[in-house]
Length: 381
Image (cartoon, rainbow, N blue to C red):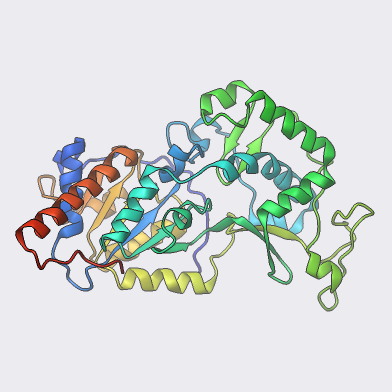
């Protein structure tokens, strides 16, 4: 079965912290410590599954947090893959909003939680990161720790016809050149501070609705004037039986039947590619436990991975401030007064919990080196 990125709209349950001691920072760190250092049943590997919540501290919006898109903007509806492929006007709207949102995404950087995950990889505690996020923060924060981006990435665009990828940064320059009025509008918003502030409340006061995946909605703006370029390769050498044309300024022409560029992300309603699907399943099959960070598991593609881990009887730890889809399923076997090695559910901030956890694990390593001169810290896998 294909994994698909589908939004889940049903209400999520309130977090049920397990064990009870994980309601405090000290207790949560102790439980996570026991979870990650429990004797392995197979390989000893821990796989991380991360979601939008881990990037909120970098200034990006999430979907379901207290300031999330679905929480504050009840009418928000992301573009679906079939709409993008079939509708020229829908693509104009998408690229116009992405053009405005790219500046903030491009400027943002990984935060302390990403850095903590990097440390867990360096210590040999985490073997693989599976992320739902398309911001590339994991690959920037820990390039040597294996990262599988199940929903793709915004750093590139990809042609729907020939599958050639192009730099999103360079594509932004092309959009600016084709849309001088929009470029001037973007500069005005940057000068006003509307896009440079990372405070979601401030953005709303300035009339902006900032959504995940580099999307900005400006009420009252007409998107039909926006233009986007065709795939350069297809323009030069169209696929057999297809036509790729551009206007005098170089914009994709509606007479074309190919050469459409899309973000290199898995859009809602689009299937995850088979190589990524197989790599993700293999990572879970070779792991001993799963650590979920900042994800509500609201998309089927992510929820199914946690379900797979559960079916393989792997302990699961969830650190997410909001509710989690199917939380009762993943936590039903976790004792309310356990130590954390059987699994845990924590609803504290990742920016607090993860650095403290890393510090605790480093203290363990230092103690072992002091008491055993021959001790060697576990290598990065």
